[in-house]
Image (cartoon, rainbow, N blue to C red; front, top):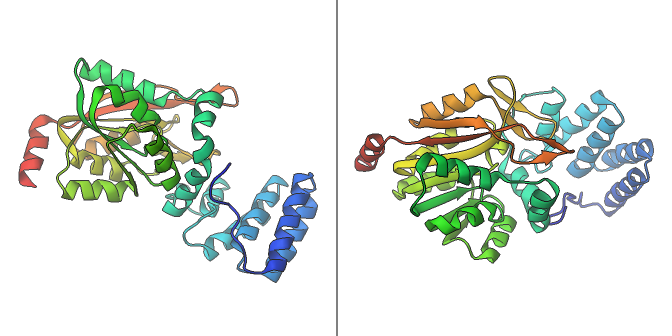
Length: 320
């Protein structure tokens, strides 16, 4: 991956050198030696979060679950913003909250690093087709024979969703937490407005400004959101009368939310239905759809389309 570095210096040149030496050992396949060096490194620099996180990862690869948990717990406590994602790794191992919310710092770092090769990775390597699935679903339900007035692309990334929908949209707005992703989207010249911002904060500000969209889109964005209710509720507030909310997610056979080994969330159908109903939206479609492949297999997912009843939306706009 490219972009912002995963490494964050300890501020101690000797400790940083030990860390790099450990990674070189690991790259040569000497995980035991790498773990030993990292253990000595964190003794030298106890607040060295990057080294603690790497120690957890190497211990995990060695099958040392207890050792990995201990290292990642130290990393989590030393870094409340969870730049490296220690709380997610702990959840994956069954230590702590099973479905913790991802911090903005972690998500921003993750996608800033991926921005340069994001399109190639998704489209060419993973056969990604989330925007096309959403376009087909919205067309089937809305009968898009005319243009969409305005569309908000949540978690727009590099603009793959914007590219699919732009021919039918008069006014296209994109928002993404990652500035590097926004920069890539801007290069494509698809959007009338772009913002690097947290999704809930952006939706809240749009609601205060009485912005209304005919379509709010989220292509494979909610796989990084543990609880869908806050974001579906916030999205409903910015929908125009009879506007649509359309999104793709990954799913599982149960009802609730599961953090997968990929560190993405899978949402059960019951959770999706409840989040849409609690937002005051009418569910029009919830069907199985795979937006990508991983390791040669289709990732199990859902495509959802909901709308805000025209009378309810009009009353909300009038009361605001």
